[in-house]
Length: 107
Length: 120
Image 1: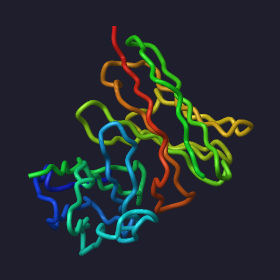
Image 2: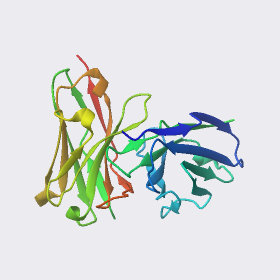
Image 3: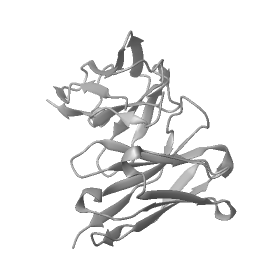
Image 4: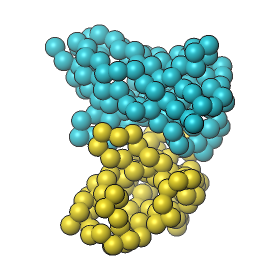
């Protein structure tokens, strides 16, 4: 199976900060990498698809990029509603796999 | 608007089966895959598989092969996920989610989740 290594596993930041979360695939996945935000008691929300495309309705402070095997989710100017858990997901090959998640807490 | 509405919470005993439904509305039911993803308490997201409502073709995560069955009823735009031989490890919130057909999919719409509790 395709392993997705996501880092860090947790992160503390303040409102207004810029944060980055990284995901690395164990094999080539082209750009078939998506990012989700997940809050307790809610369904996950798609933020970024195909590595760098912003999902309709997602705030523009979220962006995705890829450099070699590393995929990055960047949140510019953190807002209070951004504190949540973030997951990457590869859909290059089944089984579809998720990263372990990054919990973003308020510092 | 696109909606996926799931059935309610379930409590099952070990060894039993559970069947969760996911009713779609607001789009052409047969034009998109439906995936099932779960989250156990304190754990991350785990993919179980997908079904094509168009022809009933399924792809399951090998870990669940033999225990999971995904079906659909096109007359009522509903997909079902049945998981058998339940253990306490299957206690989780189960989500259905839509994706486009073909490669490179992403889940842009999700159901509200169904809590399945397995307890003796």
